[in-house]
Length: 581
Image 1 (cartoon, one colour):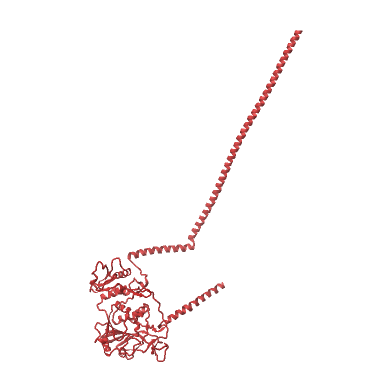
Image 2: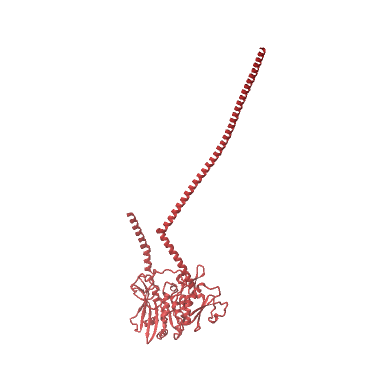
């Protein structure tokens, strides 16, 4: 039993041991479980930590992604902004381009519209016409240059030859050479231009330039004068006649007394050359004898040079010391004698005229006691009125001087050029000429210059008044006449002028006055020349307007009264018309 008990005890102990072991096992198991649980927790924690880490990682990644996304979004925003800006810029550029296009379209429209506007049509028409005119001018200029055509636009047509020269040159029968004596390079442009035109007028004329340095003895074969530079020698190759023209004769000069220097006032190249042509081609040239010894007035420089230019040779003659008028006398010239001629002298002059001689006679109002001379005039049917002629009617005297007469110019061969040029003749302090009823039937008297009907002769030339007085002689009067005596088939001609001052230098120098033409045409008339080739000097000085008293008063009224009144009336009319509107 005890054993049994022991055994039971052992069993119990064994059971307890087993129980302990079991409990220990349970405890271990519990520990193990707890360990496992802890391990699980640890694992869970680790898992959680891993998850947390993963989460953190994911969060970090997410954050990074978010950051990246934010950056991307920022980039997208920036890109969007850039795109928007670009879009806006494009829109702005497009708007600007559209604006420019609109402007271009508008400008183009305006430009196109301008082509259809009235202004454009007018401008286009003007432009086209201008282009056409320019082209025509260029073509004409080319054409003119090729043909060497020149137009003279100088004052008085200085480089243009007159019709008188052209007509004379056309009738030339002999070959003429004009030698221009000038050193090479020193040619006068004006003279060259004029002289060369003669060669273009006729194949009978040839112009040659000769250098006096290269040909020192050339001129001596034609003239004894000392040849100066730019001078001319005109030679007729048929009869070998020659005439030398010095350059000083082709230029008119005068002294300016304010500076005491010489200045050129005119060019006479054409007159001198044409005169030389007449000289070398005409056999019988007129010779004028100027009577002296009775207080006659000498002619001035202008008339002297003008007579020489028309190839009239002038000589002096004292009728008191000769028995006969020289045979070569073509014209007897008597200018204002102050003392009377002797009976022998009058007889000699009568014989000269009866044999076909011709004369030009001018008288002076101041001469007295010329009974023999007046008798000669009576013989040819005229008489001189006492005193000097004055005019009452305006338009028949110059300025305010009633003794500076501007007479009517009657139609005659002598006055034809004066009438055609519409110039006036001035006769200062003239003596009236009357035709006698007792004139011979063989004598024809033609009035050249005539006063108005209101003219009168002031008998008392020393009177202090110009008013007409009881003793004064009523007009009208002739102031110049042409007398032709035809007896036994012998013709003689006289031109008698009532004023020696008609040829005074002051009257001769005015181009606008026809006094010089009157005398030269009288020479032509009495010498039976068809033309005296009296070509006037081309003036380089201003010409002054010459008006008689009537013209002065007329233009004074027009300028002072008529024009201002017209302007005021027209202005008033415009003002009234505007107010009514």
